[in-house]
Image (tube, rainbow, N blue to C red):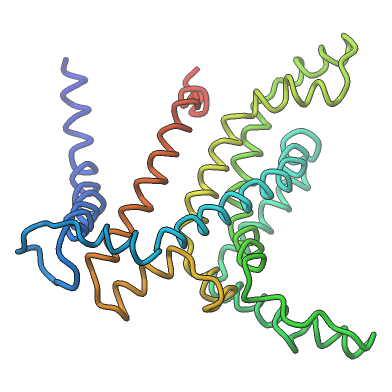
Length: 281
């Protein structure tokens, strides 16, 4: 009983910080989403007209577009990162540290700067197009301001968020189980399907959730690589709060995104053994 009371007291400061820094702003956004459009305080009768406007004005399209691009980027990241993550966990020794340092060092540079660098490379008349025109007489034209460029940006930015959880998941695979399967005549594909992927599933799921949630709400990738040709839900939320000065609409868009992502995360977490991930058993 004493230990339980001590735990509650020890957790109280952090719980207060989370309540003030996370729960309170979220509650305010949810309250604003129920207010009439174009009001700037909560002293009005809730009418939920912002949600009706969100549907009538077609904002659900940008939500579906963002979720679709996030899903595509997450699937591609899974396919790209699994071989590297497995090699980092099982095959390489010193080289794993080199890769880790290289990937982490890239995070020291602002995301906007890194993305703008790709804009300079991929834009019409940019580095790629210019060099091809100079050396071969033909170029790629502009490769930005389209959904493919945004997906590329999402893959580039959130690569570490998939790689490291996957590597942790691959490290949880017992080598004895793999060798026993090979000794019993299992093929590499069978070992991958029956042993590697199921045992590494917690790390794969964590990385997938991180990348999907972050990608769905990303703003910089859409603004820099999509321009005004591809509108994401992040663009709509920002525009509603700033240019349109319509806080209830922006709040309704944000709450809708949070609700969709929250529901998907809850479903996914129901399939994850958190005790095993944290090493408690």
